Image 1 (cartoon, rainbow, N blue to C red):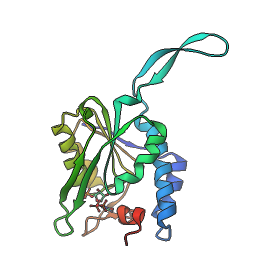
Image 2: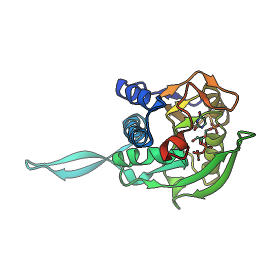
Image 3: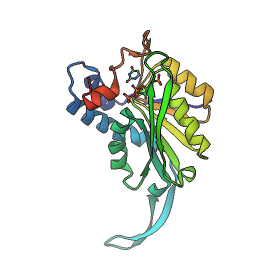
Image 4: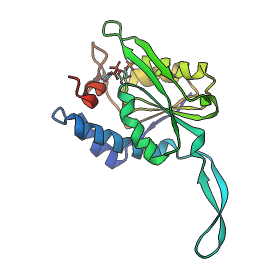
Length: 209
Ligand code: PRP
Ligand code: URA
């Protein structure tokens, strides 16, 4: 079974509370999401391999440790996942970025695919799939399945707020994919929105409602 990591660092919880507030506008919402994504990135990348490289300090040569960021890809689920990309790129500037476009049908709540553009060598990379909201889990599960069809076998899912249903579904359908979230909320309402949640993440990032 995949692991659920709840990253409840005080700075992340503080920023998330401001994001949840209904009076927080798109500018602050975007900035906070970017900051949280960078902070969460520390945990998501905590165990990635290091390589030894010889460098020279002003004093002497030494063997030092470096991350090979070329082995990573960040894949946001459009639209809202885009809001987490820049924060992660601050940490790993040479990571490649793919995009998976999915929206939830308003009646069925099932995801509909409308776009997919991934780095050519995606199967050789650690993929960090980003989406602020993990509600029913349908979008994340479909996106993970698309990545697996392309040969990816090292995928981590990074979300901001999850519902218990979404976590359970990803763990059942993709037991090899670890999930990183800042909070697991109480339940889904009749429209499959997370309660208490933060509303529609895409609309709040892009000011579309
Ligand atoms: C939201 C969110 C996730 C999805 C989560 O996207 O960003 O992708 O819903 O719901 P699920 O776990 O039930 O699938 P939405 O479909 O609203 O599209 P948007 O990001 O373009 O607004
Ligand atoms: N998508 C969102 O943006 N918010 C929710 O609460 C659920 C799905």
